[in-house]
Amino acid sequence: MVMNDKTPQQFWNEKFGASDELVYTETVNRFVKEYCEDLPKGKMIDLAGGEGRNAIFFAEKGWQVENIDISDVGLTKFLKFISFVNCVPVIFYSTICNHNHW
Image (cartoon, rainbow, N blue to C red; front, side):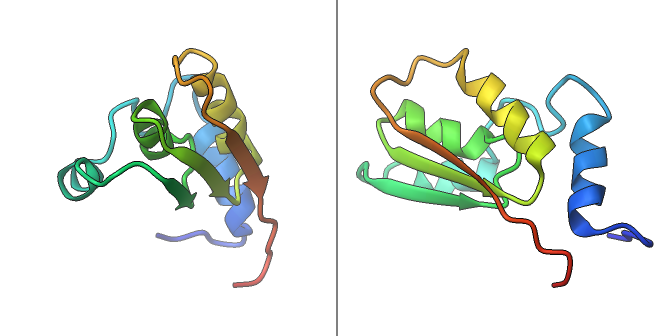
């Protein structure tokens, strides 16, 4: 993935901000579903979770989830996305990691 002269945060903010729609859809990643669907509920952290489709998949199953991403635009879309999902009383956290050098 070429980021040119942009920081990773700028790159992902532009990608997630290019449309009001979800970039990666509402559907959980097929590998996450295949390998994790039958795990007993607990706590999970979705690193680089972006718009949160995988975190929401777990939240709907009763997990306590945390979505961490470098893109504040992606996390804002995640918060909007979860507002339409019936996951109460699951606790959601969103954290912005702002690192300009990897």
